[in-house]
Length: 406
Image (tube, rainbow, N blue to C red):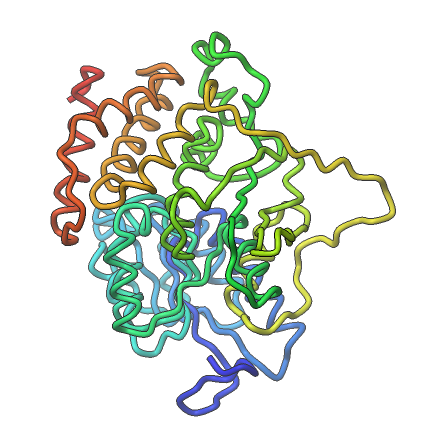
């Protein structure tokens, strides 16, 4: 994209956006952002040319039908959907969009040469192949799928260098760091990620032993999907963000810090060589980082709320407690180790979260199981992608075996 937002090939004043994971919290927020952008910037048009979901066909039909122009293609990644689109079939068919099914269709949509920006918002390991396809095709990738870098950071980095793809972070913490670096136009000394502390910020280890899925899903400041919300409660989410930051910004693990900020107003900070610290502040709303990834380097009016400066705010910063949240320590260890460690940690965590939500293990078993699986694998420093995917499968089986669920 040119500095004025036009497309570099023909200076056309519009962008085609593929929203992968459109029915999730990031995907629905992206649809809202695109709709609002077309209102505030009438001389520049945004078109959702592709939208994907997994099984939630009613919501996908509602989102696609609410757009100014329906997507050119709709993808349902669940193979079983090919047997029937469910109650929303008539709505989807009426849109006139090409309807495709399965993971291969996701990859095709991500790499489509007509697409300018791919919003990678599929949760977890499931988003890896389509995100990689967008990177290989040299797209601008608005990255909300942190697992792509956690699992395959060095592979993705090399691919970006080769293809010229842009990785622009959508996670609020990494977007904040990116914005701070752009503002300073200087190399950072320290990246300081903020964490809300989740619902168990003041709980003891004994209380967390007895935590239920319902209590762990009650996040105090963010509305997110169940997997990410549980990750926030264990602080594994912050561990994964440490690993993601290591690959996004090219700094070692010992140049990254985590502090607890319960209000979720300071999204992250950057310390520079002169010891000055720049922070990015805004109310907790994912539409701002999504829009910035779409429109960068332009800033435009955004549907996210303004920071209300007519009332007092408490902006608390607390040290993170690794004793009560041992998952955070895992993130720093994996960020330092690199190689196969990220793929193993991510896979073990996804399986453990699923078991916890199903009521089969305790909350504190999640991180314990992840550490045991991580310590039981033979680390490799520079694996190819197929080896990382092989270890992803192994780690899932190993985690389930440890809890008698294999």
